[in-house]
Image (cartoon, rainbow, N blue to C red; front, side):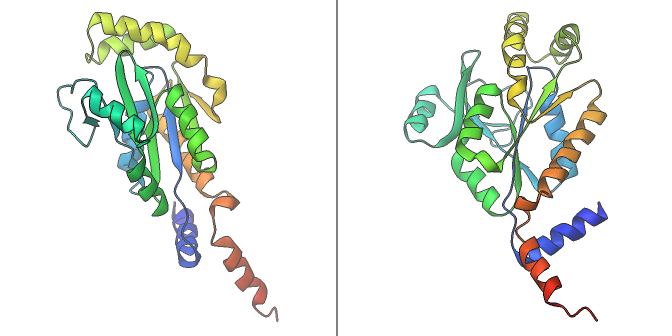
Length: 223
């Protein structure tokens, strides 16, 4: 990580890097939220996109940290005002990504991680294109997915069944993503996502400081 830190320091010396939009998608229960939390805790250069939603707040959730909880009428008005980068209805609730804070973070060179479904990912790719890196997490098996959903104790049996019914539809879009990981082990999945982010940061087109740095090298005498 020292080498990466030095490269990023050189980049900031010459020209600021625009941030990445890192999309994490998976069927419910396959690990995208757990992976996102681990990534955020390990890297201060990544911030979370906080979505707005019309669903009720769950125990332990905090307004503005987990979601912006809003009434449906207010949410629909914000859709009309084009205030979202993406929005979708999932299991009867509306979800959307507020545009302004994401654009501000990207302009400051911060990477923004998104925990969204395939519909949200599709809209984000259309809106941002070169800023987007998309990653899809597959469960090891459908049985494993069912066990995870039941074990987290966030939903009643009816909602768990709805999420299971939606899993095939979500998984069917795996080929739309640049990177696809099978989440057999959370530690390994987190490490893989970190490696993807590092590689994407170091792509030539995302290092605007390379051009002036290379020009300085070429201007130095050789002998």
